[in-house]
Structures are given as structure tokens and as C-alpha cells.
Length: 115
Image (cartoon, rainbow, N blue to C red; front, side, top):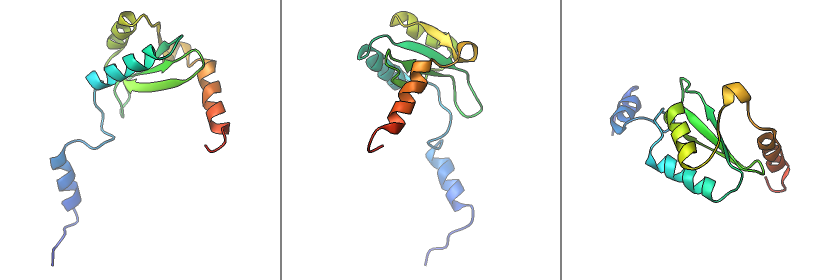
């Protein structure tokens, strides 16, 4: 018979490191993904989302047709460097909001058969 204490699962989680939802900075994998995503699409713009209590600073890349993706970027300055290096305009979501084409794309995806 194995005895299990009330707090055993919490102790085990602590030894494994942060949980999947824990905040982390954008790393090389995130940056590589963003570069590949942007290179495969046209008319890409970057919209930086501020750090929250749950996540670090993130960037949303939006293509010409509204397709979008989101990844951690680390900081607003890191997003600006990414945009400069990849010739992508960078905007602050808090100032300009999300583009209408992004909302339209998301709505179209919801109405697709089989979704």
C-alpha cells in the first residue's frame, strides 16, 4: 500500500520546475518561430502586448489577410529590434488596438465547416 499525503502533488510539481502556464521570457525558439512565420507570409505587422501578471511581453504578428500568431518576446525593445531586423512595422496594442483584419480572420475561422 502506498500512502499519499494531501500536499504530495504540490511538492512534486515544485521539483519539476515551473508549470506549463508559468511566465517565461521569449527565447530563441519563439524568435525563430516568429521569423519563419513572418517570412512565409506577406504584409506582416507586429503588435506588442504589454507584460501582465500572467505572461511576459508578447507580440502578435498579423499577415495581410488577418492570419495571426502570438509568442513571447521579452520586452517592447526586443519587439522593436525584431521588427527592425525583419523589416516589420511594430505597434503598441495599447495605443493602436488590433487591426480589423485580424478580428475578421478570427471570425471567418469560427464559421468554417468542421471547426
